Image 1 (cartoon, rainbow, N blue to C red):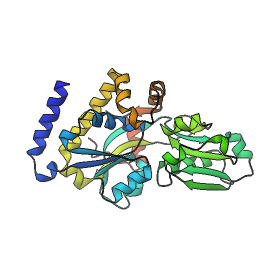
Image 2 (image 1 turned 60 degrees about the vertical axis):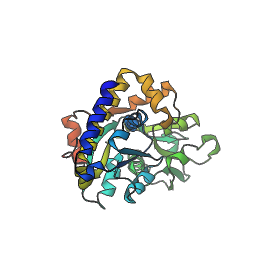
Image 3 (image 1 turned 180 degrees about the horizontal axis):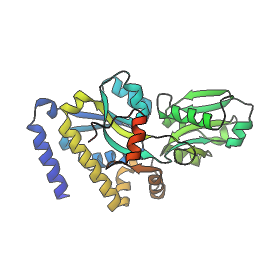
Image 4 (image 1 turned 90 degrees about the vertical axis):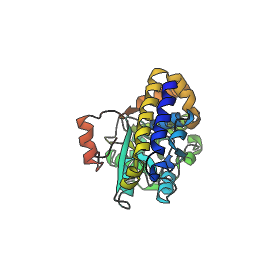
Length: 293
């Protein structure tokens, strides 16, 4: 801990000795996702304040985008799908830090089986956050399982609203695009996983931190220091997962320790060196890697 505090204060000193943009607060917006838990750990440990970094926590992928679009945050976390939406509006937007790759953490859930969906003549309700990777997840699922001829009623809700749905109160066939930890809450309310980024859907979902080139250059020391803290947080997770869990659990919908550790199996950390295969797939997804720390 002494070494950690020393590192933070050294970094803080280097920031205050730089040009004025480096002295400004860096605001980063994030959502509830197990892959972003290193950020929550760093915040709870008090590591972000000396670096003049403020973490803005929201519960919706859409809200996260709107917050950034409105200029309320300087950088945001998300997937390459949200990035591809925003880069059309801000062509200088770049990914600067990788967190994880979904390996079952993004799921399609339902109150019926895939076979029942395929045989049903009824309209299918589909709950999702429209301006997010949820949309791609749903479309890929519909294509893969031959549901294009079905009448789909798309219902745009944030994950907090979706997570309170109760299967026993729903009569129509329903599908839900969601992710950890919200999927665990939905399982307890009677929904089952029918597809995921691990088992049935060949989607690449990569989580990263995004900002513009200008903001990155103006706050490069802070971003670099944050990358080190994320790596340190993951080292803390490996060394003492129970302590890590207890620190971040308020951000994880109060998952049990067993649920939390099981959820970690549904992502692959990619904060260190990435494979050539992953880099190839990232390029295919129009995900640039040039500025990654």
